[in-house]
Amino acid sequence: MDGFFDAATTVSDFLWGGTWGDQRILPVGIITIALLGTGLIFMLRLGFRPLRRLFPAFGELWSGRKGGGEGEITPWQALSTALSGQVGTGNLAGVATAITLGGPGAIFWMWITALFGMAAAYAESSLAVRYREKHPDGHFHGGPMYYIKNGLGKHWGWLAVLFCIGTIFSAVGTGGMIQANSITQSAVEAGRSMGVAVPNWSVGLVIGALVFIVIIGGIKSIGSVAGKIIPFMAGAYILAALFVIITHIEFIPNAFMLIIGGAFGWEQAGGGLAGYGVLAAIRAGVARGLFSNEAGQGSAPIAHAAAQTKNPVKQGEIAMLGVFIDTMIICTMTALVILVVQGAYPSGDGATVDYAWQSTTLEASAITTAAFAEGMMYGAWVILAAQALFAFTTIIGWSYYAEQCLTYITGDWAAKPFRFVWVGVAFAGTLITNVTGLWRFGDIANASMLLPNVVALLLLSGAVVAYTKRFDKTGELPPNWAGDVWGTQESTEEELQSGHANAEGEATTKDD
Image 1 (cartoon, rainbow, N blue to C red):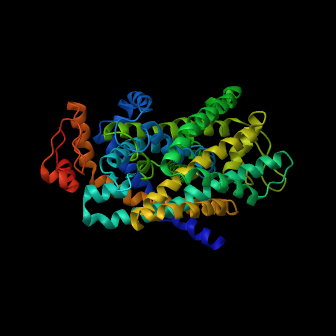
Image 2 (tube, one colour; image 1 turned 180 degrees about the vertical axis):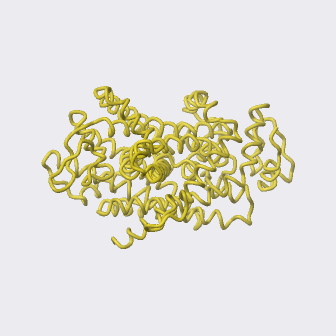
Image 3 (cartoon, rainbow, N blue to C red; image 1 turned 90 degrees about the horizontal axis):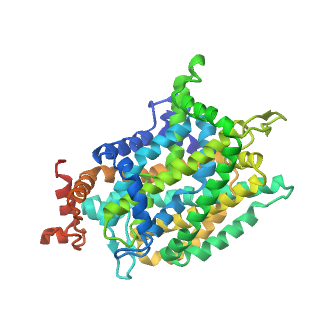
């Protein structure tokens, strides 16, 4: 198993960092270029929409507590389901891992990833609503595989299948095993702080049982649970983090100096390591940023496609909020706690260090747990509860993503049998001990679904820009690829029968 994870680390470093072993092949990784490049393209072509429409999007979310069209869950529940996949171990363990691998400067590059990611999130989720399908059983299905199939045409079917395979791969690695593993780490660490030995398998049994209870009911059950848990857990965690930050307020300026200085190599400049430090920060920040907010990865659109709405533009703007809430708020809170709380943390051979992220014996969520334990009374148990809720909701959210991709390939019959398999995936994650290797495996898994989605987004970028600008100017919505006429815009008979023809027409529309 260690050999497998060593190989995963090598491949992961190449994809995200541009290195192969000890040799640098590219200045930055392929995925870094694809992710930031796509986000930048949409940010520019959409006229910085994520910044202009941020506050109106919150109003749309509030109105979205009730559905306004066909679908299975309300826009509020759709965002909550998407957040259940986004707000997970990336917000706790992922932030700690980013700082460990790339230094405090990695947080700055997480912010940049999120900023551009909001534009990508708008594009992919609005496309997901427009090109979704309603199957004979009455359920709605959507996401990258459907906007590839219905937006690009049958000749691109191979790309849709490739995305689905990558999503299943990613779901097992990052949506299931890593989440369950992080819950286990926090449980073991919290138990150790109280002098109690918690066996991994016992945590696995509890996780498996709870996951089964929720996912057996499908997307409506998942959306209902997520809609209740997500607002509560996010609010409670933010309040706990704020308490720690306020009680250590004098260290906040230094924390921001570490973040900015590390992002641009100012601290390493004197020692000649600035270039290496910056590249390490970018690699860790972008990789962990994607793991946290999933923007451009193609997972969140699967949830937004189930929203009860006829408006792809507004649902896309609601989707932007998931990235903002996840990274700009929750991840930032975690980072500041880790960077301001000082203590005496174990670091091997009896040595201690001042900050948890500097420890050589603490990893991933254990770093965040240790910082909170030092920063507030019962902090370890607060993080255990947050970690459990964050990771649990991610497990149930990703079960839906994997299920949708599996049924796209095999047919709807595979949905219920898969839910039993998913419980086993979650249990298996609690037994893995090579945490670093598991995270690097997760990086490869994310890349395997991100690349097909990025290709599709770029090919459909003209359509996104065209219908967005038309909606802004006239309030008209684009015709659904399947033939539903939205708003006041009329569709030709050819367009009603071919989403591909319509997408091509919009894609060739010149910007005003």
